[in-house]
Length: 226
Image 1 (cartoon, rainbow, N blue to C red):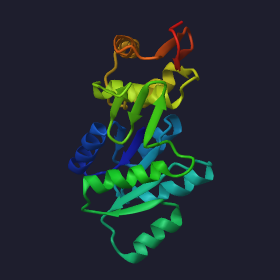
Image 2 (spheres, rainbow, N blue to C red; image 1 turned 90 degrees about the vertical axis):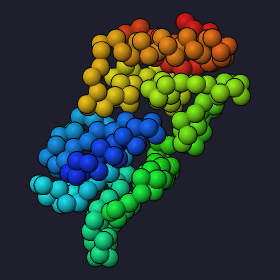
Image 3 (cartoon, rainbow, N blue to C red; image 1 turned 45 degrees about the horizontal axis):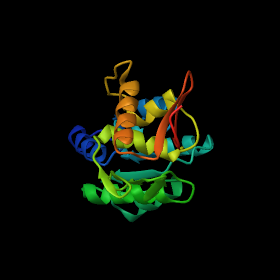
């Protein structure tokens, strides 16, 4: 899942970004409304964490523009403005949830997961394809009941492919879920990750394989590789 973090407190932003990355989220960070608008023009996000007091305005100014364009991205406002009138204004403007600073990172992650679990959103507690079970909350996977030890990025890659099991996922669609705007990516990084994950699944004797659809992308499905 890819998150846009809009926060101008650099130290807090780095803490949040690092913590969420450990939970398998891909996080893009910006400190201004202007940069946030630019990112939202080109990147698809699963959720937004939004500070209200930004250098170039109130973070709430972003919401009407999103909703007017039909973008129902869940928005979690995380702010020091703790008056009831501030919370009411935020919720009335289209914010989905409100978190008052200082906040616990555990609570932030829990509220974020709750937003992503809402009907029509992206997060499921558990995914099952063939003999693979993936727990999106814990970032763990098993094959035929045996733990599957994977690096964070490979777990994220497996998650992306399992969410579209049986359907082709394009290279750009996969990369946007794996890498943030700050990641330095080699041209063959995705192919290398696919190769590693495919080899691990084969070594474990999984009934699930990754198919390469040349010139298009990749597909996770049960059966032999093509």
